[in-house]
Length: 524
Image (cartoon, rainbow, N blue to C red; front, side, top):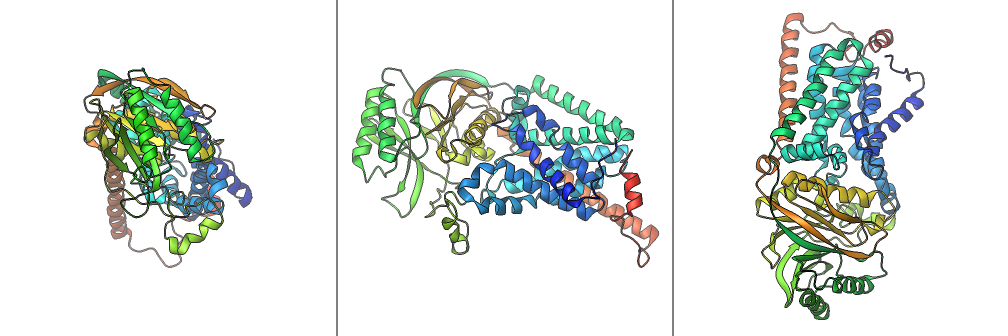
């Protein structure tokens, strides 16, 4: 198959790279075309492998990465404005070395050995990108490629073995194989072998990975007040919806993020009203306080458990804050961001440790706040500390009409499947949803147009998934693959130099073939 020649029109090529880089976002909610993820990278990789030079490939990697990040976070534009482009541009640079790898392995007519190596090295490079950008200071692991598979049962089973990282590796490996199949006829055999190997590995996991050991069932309720005007009206709506849950024989009631806008120690009237609701429903209530603390300086976002006698003393302060949304990195330099977007006027304070609560009826719960549900390690640590039910209290009302609420809710399915523990995603304005220990949805979800409460019968499971036991082993394996390949290339280069000696002065680097040679080698 002949790759389209776009070299004659640099702007056309740039536009093609931008479109190709943005395509993978269609696999995520809200479009939710999960199957498209297995071919979404192919146009981008075809353009990279056809790049006339390594420098051009690196540029294509950055430009495509910029487009992917911008498309993935486009719903931030009304709030961060120009910073959305700045952040996308910075993060896009992570794909530059990955693109160099793609061209290194797939350009021209790659041998069977190169294709086989590409099926390991190229996905490992992608996984390294996802690892780096998962750092909270860079925005966190939003839009990991594997998370597009949140509703696919075989993929959820794979997540229990290697987390979302294993899914990302598999998706990229399939894209590499498909790229070879459609572009290099002579190298189709190893690409087909790679696809067969992926299918066999997935089947083996399906047959032999441990299933959640369901032992009991609990009843929890999620209260979603919907869009309201101000914290006092929101509290009143939450109060009315909670009162309807009396007599439901519940084990826990969960309110969303920022469901209480005042410190309960400073407002004992609010504390008394929540305690009265706990007595009426005979159930402890997990609220989320977004307010200035009375016992220490600063504003915190905190999960607080309230019982019939008031706050129980169980409290979790959010640890991973949203850059620009909840704090401004290097505020002394970037503080002007508050004048061009809805960046935080005052930095929220960070908590120091995760906490597992006793709900009051013997249920061990592990709370997270907002985008902390995007971090696989947080839910894994909570389960290792004994959590039987994972909870995420969230608020996405700022992005109500965007893809963000759907994307956020979908992450709970992956966290449940990874850990073998059910997870509830409770929001102020939707989407709220509950998932069982295998990642399958429990009951109905609450959309962004609903103001209601819902009761869920949630299965509890014991046992330990491979991901909880062994952690992020796919990432560690990917790093070892890259190190091994780098060592091999280094030894190979030394041996070649010893045999041939240094190149003569004026010789053309191997990375910059002539136009005529490049044109012939990139077609088959």
